[in-house]
Length: 193
Image 1 (cartoon, rainbow, N blue to C red):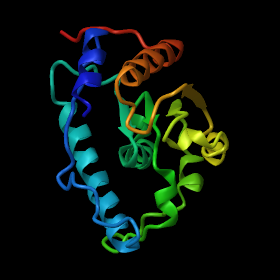
Image 2 (image 1 turned 180 degrees about the vertical axis):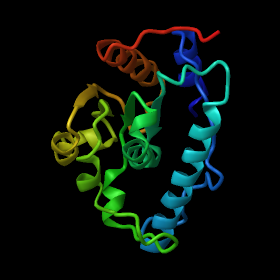
Image 3 (image 1 turned 45 degrees about the vertical axis):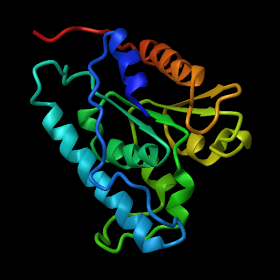
């Protein structure tokens, strides 16, 4: 589902690490707060491990690491990005599922807050939220208003006609638009030797 986007980023000179979370299957029901909370917590642990290991790869410019997350992955990237902002340059959040924080409880880890808006208020790295207008959260033009106010440095990109999955041409537009944003943030591709 993300391989074509990863390949497009690679064509632009980015080093991309695509991975599946250990518990990559979505929960059977988003109605169970403990299940969804533990599901997200496990993914936070996975992403932290991937971030740690990626720094050991010679191809990775450790001064230019960005997290990309879609849907629940966008929520996970928000948690990890805020926690690990000293290790990151920015966040690319595609139709992130911030709504899930109202539904979840962290049974396995009680110290994690579910108030994402309070947490992301401490995120001092640049963020872009990308959404579509058809079958995605962007159908409601105010869906991300709280997060846009909470993130100290956040851009908002709407892709007309894109659905939640960012299928087809919308996927290419996600890469194009996020590449433009990263360049505006001062990203310059440099191959590590």
